[in-house]
Length: 262
Image (cartoon, rainbow, N blue to C red; front, side, top):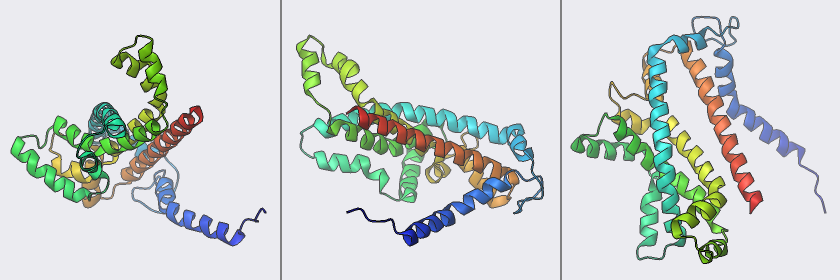
């Protein structure tokens, strides 16, 4: 028996959604303001604040730094996370649950706790304020997301395909790259996208590990908000929102494509 949709529930869901999205939409509208201050509704429409962002060396330098750190994080986190997922799904060894919990813990441990711990260790090791120190920190935060996505792809993986490849003479490495990796690629790609978003949006850990030479975009934005609310921030927030939405849609599409191929 088909039930008719509850119109009251639908209206309530739509209103809640609009309530949550409204602040973001207001900021996006204000980013096109022609005025010198943030004001809603805007006095006029202009792209002057987007031009201000492009012309500012401080902003562009932080974007470039964030991009380098994020790409490096994606490479390391995707490689290590994929191997770790293989070990967690197929491995049988003592303490497997403890090891899994430790590696996935950055997803549940408060960011401020991780930031303080990393800062204390990095200062002792001389890695605080370095780009590769920041990459290592972001990689440790991003690996759990890669593990979760790759492990999900491995759950329904038919290992008979690997056995068939090995019976035909393929070694373990060749079997992995020619058989296993192509079949779990949707999970790997989704994990890589989440790793990029984790690094790109990270602000708490980055604030503790930043230096005058190594300052990511979220750190610069946070410092700017505390001192002066520049309309350029609205333009930058709009671009970051659009980028995040695009990446999330991409990750969702990749995962759905992977599920259809199973």
